[in-house]
Image 1 (cartoon, one colour):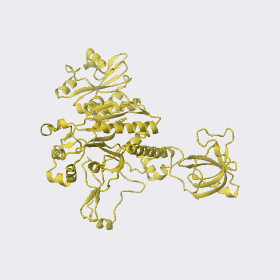
Image 2 (cartoon, rainbow, N blue to C red):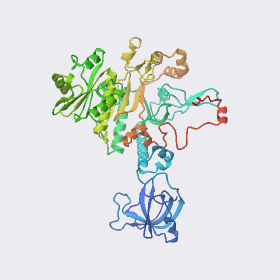
Image 3 (cartoon, one colour):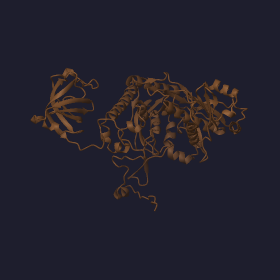
Image 4 (spheres, rainbow, N blue to C red):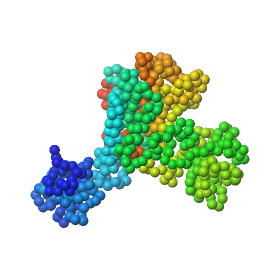
Amino acid sequence: MYKTHTCGELRATHTGQTVTLAGWVHRQRDHGGVTFIDLRDRYGLVQVVGDPNKPDVASIQDARQEWVLQITGVVRRRPAGAENPNLATGEIEVEVQSCEVLNPAKPLPFLVYKDEDIDENVRLKYRYLDLRREKMQKNLILRHKVVKFIRDFLSERGFLEVETPMLFKTTPEGARDYLVPSRLQPGMFYALPQSPQQLKQLLMVAGVDRYFQIARCLRDEDLRGDRQPEFTQLDLEMSFVHRDDVLQVVENLFTEMVKTILPEKRLLASPWPRLTHAEAVEKYGNDKPDMRFGMELYDLSETFKNSEFRVFQMALENKGVIKCIVAPGCSEFTRREVDDLTELARTQGAKGLATLALSTEGVRGTAQKFIKPEEVEAIQKLSGAKTGDLVLFVADSRAIANKTLAALRLHFRDRLQLADPNLLAFGWIVDFPMFEYNEEEEKWDAAHHPFTMPKLEDLPKFETDPGAILSDAYDMVLNGYETASGSIRIHRSDIQQKVFQLLGLKDDEIQAKFGHMIEAFEFGAPPHGGMAPGIDRLVMIFADEPNIREVIAFPKNQAGRDVMADAPSPASERQLKELHIRLELPKEEE
């Protein structure tokens, strides 16, 4: 070994010991013939002090940032008053007896020793340098702790970790597959897994009644701050369970995790709140609510059923709704600020936005002259709005009103700093619709995925009213993100066949794509269910990071490129020939 101790472990109790350290030059300072270096490794920093006039120490004077050094020296206490209370090793320093340069470093494209604003593409191009920074090291350590906790927790409760194939066949998960051509079967393709959904259900048929996997999944979809083409999830499945059995295991897992590895955070509630999908959408405007703050949506349709305000009348005549939120302390917003809010509402599909400011001088706003005093009083009674608040109304279809007010709610959350970053508002959303109607293709789509069990009492509705069928699906939400999705699965071949048929699949298509699943269910498949919390997204929230790239060692950029390795990149003619592939690229515009 190149070292006897790490840079972060030396303390006053090591005083007088001769030690050998190896690491990177974090910072270097020359003080009157004596060189001070902060030597760094993954475990911390230690100050080493050397006299470059000594032959075995001379190279210490040449060392610059990020040079790799091996230092041998004696641990001594720092002079009185020179201690560093912000450093774990701050009571001591190492008097250098010998210094060897293991590897010099050329000037870096950015500083590693301090957290500065760096262009993200530069950080990603030199990711191996970016990962040396303290913040990124902390994120990797946090991610490791989360995954280790999951493995230990589930293993202690009888779960088996089973690996499933990366090369499988296409699955209907709602996104495009990454296809892998087969060299040995020309014209045939594997698909990289969007999730191990079918395989974990087959493990239930196999009698592996408690399964989990830290699963790598891939989806060829457009990217966002909380999405990558490849991602990691905790894949979990259990046999002989109802919905609440699955929810209890996962709730216990994350409740204990927060207590153990995130003591600075606190839970909003334990047990976690549960909302039906319909309740969440009506109360918060979407099905992944941030419950750390109020600003709930209120339905005022009944209040304004006899309103003389033409905008409100038209919405109700078209079977729409009138809903509002209350922005606390915002009654003094300027006309320009209200115009900006109206523009935000329009980006969500709303035709406009009406406002009512409850100021100390009376009621003002764009809706002031259309709303009667008794209606103002009814609004205040229903919503709790008080003097100093701004009431924002959307009169539109229920879907547009909810979507628009949800966006405005989050806007005010950030603008007014209403959400405590150290509060973790876990919650469950249950009773999702089973199907969604695709207007463009004029057919039904699965709201979650087609292996989700419908509520058994809703089975007669397959022929009469598919849109009214509820599923045994559930989501885990946290601070405004969907962090897990799951369901009780179909384990009966007749129900699975019925679902596929409603989705428009022909019998021969069902057999070609899912024949192995249908057949497996005919060999004694147990009732089962599970879910898949997203590890990247959860660690992102735990680390207070703005996007998941900050908690992934080697992520793709927003265009889906690995700028460090310059991937994706062209394949050679030989590779394409072996795979029986001919390229037909789009012509470049002249």
